[in-house]
Amino acid sequence: APPQPPTAPGTLWAGLTPLLLLGDKLGLLQAGQSALQALADRLDEVAERCGPAIAPYSNPGKTLAAELAGALPLLWSEGAVAAVAARHWSVTFAALPGRPALAAELPEAMTAHGALLAGGFAAGADPGDFFRDRVEEPEALHTRVVLLREGPPGGDSATVAARDLAYGHDTPVSELEPAEGSSPLEAAAELIATADFAAVYLTLADSDSPWA
Image (cartoon, rainbow, N blue to C red; front, side, top):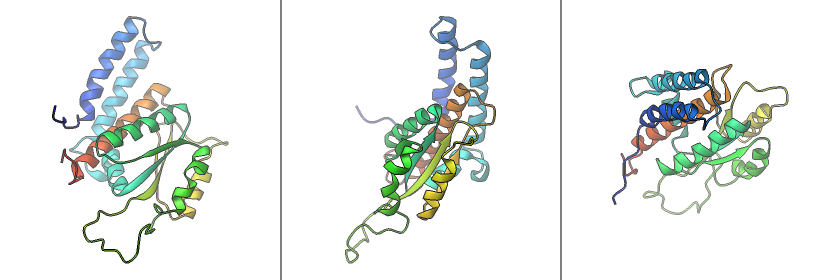
């Protein structure tokens, strides 16, 4: 069967909330009605902020897509919810725009991905033969650190060290965390939904994508 174009995130989220409500009523989920309503409200808020009609300067999805264009995202997460979101980002970016994205949890991520900040994917690096003809070759990907948190960094947070490591290698940094006071369910929804919008915008902007 021929490949199908990517589905807009709003379509997925519109069907997810009723399923969660049904699962709660059947006793399959341990989330109360108020928690599920808060989830639905948060997904609506993300859809409003990231929708196609919203200008890039106030649209987190479009902003993130612009920042990640031509980048190899290093998804550094802090917290269990953010770690799940980072893994979702990695899968989604591979499936839609066809871009690699590497997920790892802080503080181990700084060691696991540290070599990428100074190697062939580093900002300004040229990993190949200087004298070869590059006219027909696509632009090389360069690393960009994406810090994903499920809340404001605490006293034992590795966020500052992660920023310092990235900036010390002239690597740009994007940061995303949910609204203050978010429940784990709301935090996961916001991080995941924002990534989905960014992935779709990247897909549509990529002239080499089969969906463009």
